[in-house]
Image (cartoon, rainbow, N blue to C red; front, side, top):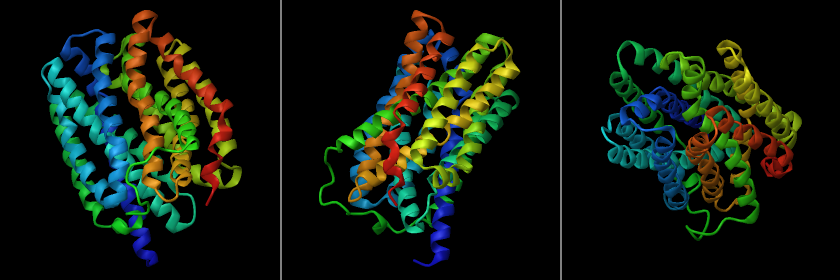
Length: 381
């Protein structure tokens, strides 16, 4: 493939990651508004959010098999297009039952695009012959940062419905614009003779670590704004700064992550990153003032940023004949943490308090740091 075409494919994947992150940022200010609209407590709302987890977990293994049949490029285009339409479902849902249904569909599209775009990122990384996954995930975080701050401002000025519509249209337009520059379907189509197969034990082990990493990120996504609003009694838009700050720290570390991975290796990078995440998150939960707490969340994001990209890269390499399936296994387990973590936090908060429930993320970060040797597969170029 010509170098110019490969560079175009890299930019196309980067754009898709950017828009993927943007829609997550656009969802952040909608979360406390949805809770208020439904008129339910934190425990019941946590159960409603579990529908997003169910949809994603349902779609991820299926997408891994479909990638082997059709290629990750086609799956990325289709699932992304559907995601930005499905985003409007839980925003517009008027009641509890319709919210759960819309959230399940939203989760399905999240899971499908996540597997597809990461699989295509691995294909580009292999063609380049050097790390690039952290940069892709860095742009996801940049998208989340921009989406959070812009959406928080729009919710306060033009209202939540106009904000959601603007986000959906923007993401869909840029996603489709990038689609024509992806690698051809044959880049990862039909590498394995079987579409469905059980993942290896090594892939499952890496996926369990990814479960913990994305449990941390998902918990801050869905509960960070609620935590800030309830602890410091600030407006919803400003409360969203907790997750925006987290994403800002993650973006900075991920944009440097490929160089750090080459210099220090995946194991050392993940171990240090996990302990930084634990320290920053604990400080964010304990500090009694909002501005220092936001600073602590930035520090925690700096630590968390490079953990998931390294694990996704490892998943694609543990099953070289079926990289989509390997990534699907890691992301399925990972996003069980990302999307079931928030309901877990909600149920725990009913028993103790929200700050103590979010302390589970600190324990998860410490566990990752102590098990970092399991990510060494990511260095097998």
